[in-house]
Image 1 (tube, rainbow, N blue to C red):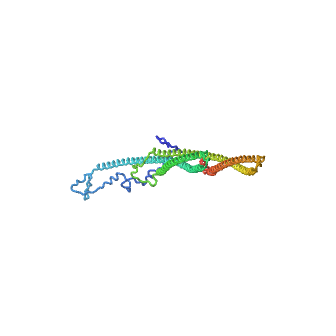
Image 2: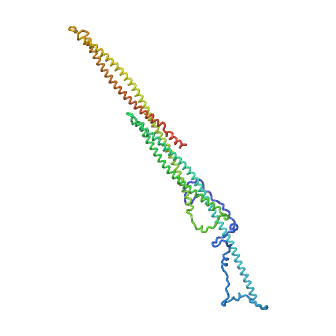
Length: 494
């Protein structure tokens, strides 16, 4: 449909149908207005008569009594008096008067007939003109109603097509809204897991409580998830607002379509009305009632604006769905990549801790073996010292006994010299053995201390491995969103 002087903004799906070329059939004057009563507010039951009839009938002649002042009739109007006498005949007019009277009456009759013939011809022509004008006017009205019905059908079809497209777009956007809500809910699990991993790693002991790469990646993961949640929430708010816009546009289309259907029904009924149709009546003063609120230009512009608004809302909704799809894929990929980085950091840290634990166990075993050997040596040294002390006792007892020799028997002989040397050698040996014993005991203490450090470090490493491998990786292996993130991404792709 093209409106002169106004550019239509909306894009329509089909051209406007041409107006109907065939007017509805009308009957003749006799069949159309047979037994029809013209509108007379005063009476509806009297038969139709010319207006002169009612004017003449309105005169009611009356007889007035004769009085003395009555002047009497004119001579020409006096009824001839007939005497009671049989031979008394009176004549009042001449024969010429009689002929002139007849000729006058003939001329008057002819003139009256001529005027009646002219009046009949005028009435016939007037009735024919009125019939043709009524037929032409009714035909034009019927044609205009047909064009109006075609216009309404065209706009109805455009509204139906746009309404179907808007319903499909709204349903698609609602599906996207559900996916956004599900994705936003699914981010809560990864966020809690990362937070619990940080809290669990706070339970590490000693030197293992370090700011390693795992902790840095966990903090990055929490920031990433929080950023993704904020973007998803903003996108969800935008989708909700767009759904409201779509709903408003849909309501306007549905309201306009309902009005078009009602108008189409009424105009179709009017288009099908004929002179012989039932249900036609007189409605006094209806032509003076102007209940219109629009003209064809504003009427078409109203529907065109509704369609244009709906098309704009659909275009915005489609762009929003595309951006939301991209956001879902982007956030899912970002969270998955960060999740993989954290897992890789955990794996590297667990491997590193396991290697350190293995080395500690190796060193601890060697230390324990060395402690065992040192303890064995200490026992040997202690046994040697005891043996030497017995030898010293023997040598000193001999020397003491030899001091009891009488007089000259106190000889510094070879035995005396050897006993003195033996005592000195044993004392020197005992002194060396005691030094070795103290050194061995000191070394044993150092080994025991080293053993304690290694055992404590082993406990620390076991605790770190338990936290990282069992608690943290145990939660991350059963990570609920690892499948769900890929799930809603694949759902969007399908």
